[in-house]
Structures are given as C-alpha cells and as structure tokens.
Length: 234
Image 1 (cartoon, rainbow, N blue to C red):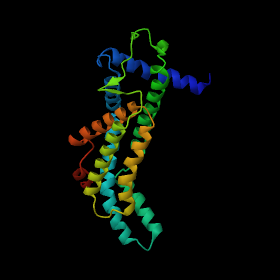
Image 2: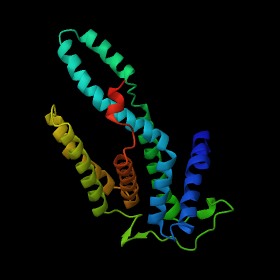
Image 3: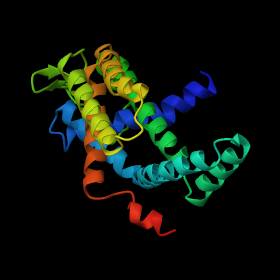
Image 4: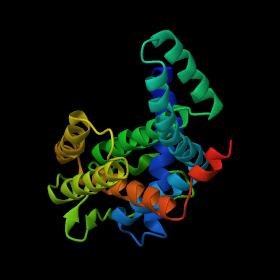
C-alpha cells in the first residue's frame, strides 16, 4: 500500500466511516439518511471559522466590485494603473478567495469520501474497519422517506438544482445592474449541470449538498459574515 493510500484510508476514509456509523447507531436512530445529515451539520460547525472568513470576504468583494467599477471609469485608458489600483483595493479591504476555496475543497473531499463509503462500505457491508468502541450494526437502513440514498434519484438532484437556481436568481436580483448574458446563462446552466451530475451519483450526494446549502442559508439569515456598513467604515 502506498503512503497516499495509507493516509487516505487511515486518516480520512476510516474516521469518516466510523463517525457515520456512530451517528447511525445513536442520534440517527439507525437511519443512514439522518446520519449523513448530522455528519454534514457537524462538519459545517467544524468549518465555521472558514465559513466566517469566506462570508466576510464575499460581502467585501461585493462592496469592492462597486469601487472597481469606479476605477475602471477613471483609468479606462491606463490598464497598468488600473491593475495596480485594483490590487491596492483588494489589499485594503482584505478580499481573499482562499477561505472559500478551502471550504469548497474540504466539502468536495467529504463528497468523495461519502462516495467511497457507499460504494465499498455500505454496498458490500465491509464493516471490519470499525473502531473497537463502535458497535457493528446488524443491518444498514439506507431508506430515507421512501428513497434509497445509495441509489440514483431524479427528484433529489432536481431539488438541489432548484435551490441553486433560486440562490443565484436572488443574488442576481440584488445586483441587477451590470449583469451580462453570461450571468443569465450561468443562472440556468449551472443548476442544470448540477442536476445532471448528481443524477449520475448516489442520492446521498444530493442529501449532503442540500443540508450544506440549508446550513449556509441559516447562517445568512442570522447575519453571519459581516455587514457592508462595517466595510464602508474602513
């Protein structure tokens, strides 16, 4: 076994699989769908610091966009100066995409791990990797309101696509000025592509993404991530 395979199994796959079965045995009341939801919520709570930085950066970026539009008018004939001023602007308001990128990477990593769990751990009941303190369930219940989360589904990917479309639509309504044809195409094509890709995968992926989107939406409702007024004061 290579070092990469050893690291993946020992420090990523096996711990996540054990956490999922531990939740399944306890809080999820032997329902794997709820276990996945609880696991997603726990993960999002652990990632709250990154979510906070990402949300603040997004709020600042929206504010910086307006400033950048003014810069483009002032330096439309001097692209070198425009780039220089844009860098100063990003630095001044501390806009950085690294937090959001890392947040998406970790969630993507969990999606891959969940896929491995459902292909190898659940389908073939390979429960021999459970830690001594985790009880081995006699049966794995993958039914979630009449849907098998280990199988393909059309409805759940469609729900994800609808949520993504509404999220993009609402965001574009807030910034109606300056929207291009590409923005409108993105609002339609991105949800459709998401539906197609999720349809190719087990339903558990849609459940994970919906839970994560709901968590992010709740954070937005409670004002998590910083106010534009705080940015303007700088």
